[in-house]
Length: 486
Image 1 (cartoon, rainbow, N blue to C red):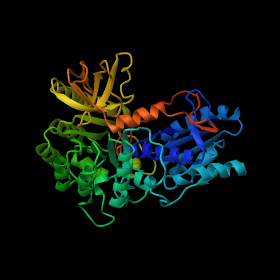
Image 2 (cartoon, rainbow, N blue to C red):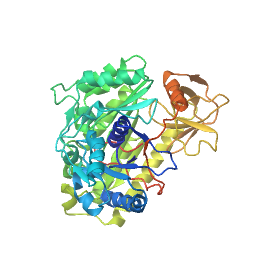
Image 3 (cartoon, one colour):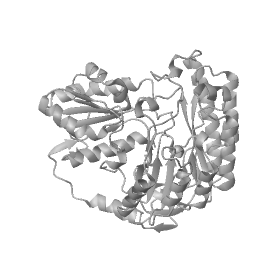
């Protein structure tokens, strides 16, 4: 299973894995050539199709040498390109869209029996993703989709055309899934939506999202609640109050700014202005002084002037984000912005991008240095520090979502446990705690992680995974309302 894009795509891939395992497939060993390869694609970047077809080209000789191997392509690019994928890569067996991920096992079987490619793109959602089985990648943290689709019309974003209009789950269904996850040992849930704080509009309750946050906070055994990504237009005071008054809701807000220029925001069709955005930031910090605020910013949108870019720098200085995911504007075929006048030269966009990154890195580093000496409780994570093994460290997330690398100590905690550490160094993008944990709270989430490590491996009949054809260059994260990859 190879996934490109935002957290919604990651969540969909968990569902696809669950569907396939329910149908009798098992995950292939890391060094094995699989019988089934599934690409879950993203379409928000201009070169997304080049990346997909490059990967498909790598697989062509692998498939030629392995009779019966199948390749499936789903997700946003599949929803957009449809039969074009099979035309350009006729060795693909199945193409399915964002609305019918539940059809994948049947489409694979149909392609096998009929010995011809199956292309099935539904125009409306067949099953809400969270009603489908899942193979969760983490034993201690889980995504929970509360809505899919988007009702906004941002000129740079193709997501509404590919995901459809917003559809909300009923609160009782969301809470039932949260309780089930906690019963399995999950300690942290992240509520997902393309525009998560517009939740409730479909069934006429504009305070439904704040109510849902409070209700999740009352689920016994749930340690942490997060959400992504809210839209500034829909951000209301009751949500800030719910965040501040619900201990389980973490003091972290990821809210896309996209631009600090009101003129550019207008051209983007973003229905707020910079003063509105900064007003929300001020209210959040007044209610939760310890909160970390992160954002997404696009540099080089068509028509962006030097003055517009300076406005973005001004807002970044005033907002003092803990981190910003910054992107150089790229055309998305099918979006209004792709044909707008005033497309900027690459060299100018690159220069502005570098200035923005330098400013934000300086702010992030200053903030992280201020945290030296502070004690923080971490949800211990698995595989989030690339150099953890060689430095005998582990990693975890603080309540404000900052990544902290810490010394494992003589009795290392398990992923899913909670460890209290003292910060000794602040880097621009992470914190370090050189000492061993001051305290460790073993949790049911840690038990769940340990049980997963000791589970006996199933005997493979048909394998599922990725062939050894080289790791792809990762896609940049989505720059729509969905938050970027973690």
